[in-house]
Image (cartoon, rainbow, N blue to C red; front, side):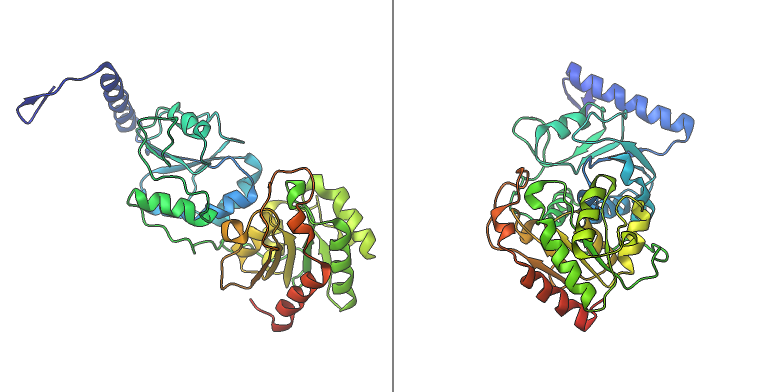
Length: 341
């Protein structure tokens, strides 16, 4: 190939890439299809919500692309509240990703090579990712394990020249609450036992808040229904105080937006409270709030004993167990009394 009067050797790999790019461009011209921007985030609710600023930054940087999010299908109900996402591809974990030849593939999944390799198998025109020593040929910033999860992905995009605002977390309008608003939501579940405060302590918090005249409801997913019923019964709450398993994600978002307070562990519910601007008391265990907690300066109280541990352990973290009921109630009263919104 001749470039500027110089002869440049073209390897077989380069020829293959050029042919794929030519085929990609020709197909778009013939069909009028917009180029695809494929983003991998095959994780849970909290993970999706912490990636919202990065997703919106990618949308602004690629206004003419079709933004395809590879994430679990059950999160699809939240996509209209995030905005700018055109399509969902059902992916749980780091891949494989059932998509072909995106124009740009973005790894918002994690630090391991599996997600990066899964995106490379889609044969993208370009990959945006953190660099990994196990995947040569992909440039990107170095992974920083101490970074806050929201800032991590914004910083990665900044490395590629894409401005991103870590504070751009708020979800769009959710509509009215199914309960009318003003409730205290107690969410005792967590995806790992290490981050699950004892249910008996949640019950004591719920009972004290109820005695003070607040309407308390127990939330959770379908798999957390038994736990929610146990907490409600121990707190002396009626059966209709248990909403676990009875609301979809848009309904939970609406319920949370119009609630007076959320009390929960370091789980997806805490990020949902942040995303809709509802005050929250977040019980942090093995992971410090500097990495996964709510943003500073907001109507939130992140409680942490100052100890780190294994977030995937099969028993409650020792640091989490150091947080007592009086401490949680003090934080709840401080938020409820001033009515911070």
